[in-house]
Length: 419
Image 1 (spheres, rainbow, N blue to C red):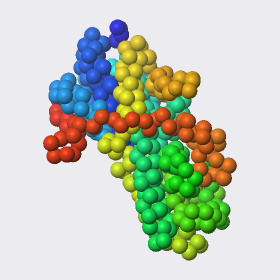
Image 2: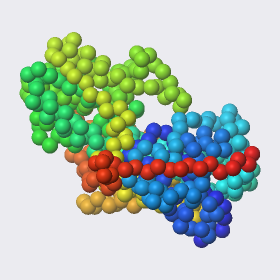
Image 3: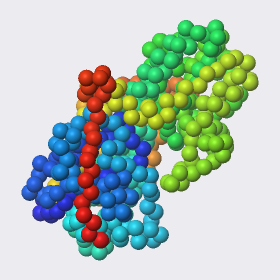
Image 4: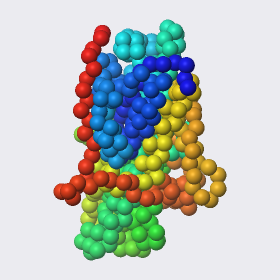
């Protein structure tokens, strides 16, 4: 039993996934079950913004059935945001405001579910709490479809988006096969800013040499127009069609993104370039330089919240990291993020570990060279062994009488403000 008693606060940040709510359920249900340690469990409305605005709600007041339904619901139903806090030297006032809210509500445990920037926020918040001697335990819960968090074998959310896109490419590839006399090429764009894990996952669809995708464009491999044109022409000669899976973050040799929102570089609130449109650039190159018709597919945000086809492995592990975060906090662990640790051996098994928040915040994990084939346009058997287990099984989905999924609805009754 933990010696520190007080309320727990759980928040979500960044882009939603199919299973981030499963992680939240793991945190919430575990914390609610430990009344000796946690005197209450709150949610923050829209991530760290909710804390800054003191918009907190009592998760114990929610219908327990709806909390459990989070395990089978996509998106970030606690409420998310893309609000990045910078360093303590520049945004110290915001960090002090957060601790002011925590003190007012006796929040002693903070669970932040997110990616690199969220881990950075949690790390700095814990640092300031230590400086002013406010007893606070901060634990990070990993989340990102991009799978680019360092120090964890993989990230909750990745297995499901990988399963979705591999299947979408498989099915769209059959469409291209049927109509290759008219629609000769297809370019399927997937998410992935600086790492090509999602694009690489489409390679799982290629069970036979002539299966889609024939070419995979990864951010880790610079896009050279002349080589790409040669690859397309070779593919057309071999298969009479060409299916290209394209990561949104594909770059030219000089580091420029192929796809820029609105035709220009634009930044989100994190300072990241807003991408989207790489497939259109690739299509234009095919039509102009190869001289054949090309189509484009973009799943957009649908790919990251496709709970109807989520991976059972992914959903189970997402819940597991939420549970592990609470156990770590009860054990007095502070300033760490839960990681997924793959066990050795041929049979896939996964457990959890811990890593310092600062290490995750400052790290990034690209697709390693051993996962990329010699031509730079496909994946190796080593990658298949890595990613294959992550897409296995179908996550449970509750289906209503109307034939459509039933997802959680939280009341989100705000507690009274005290500051």
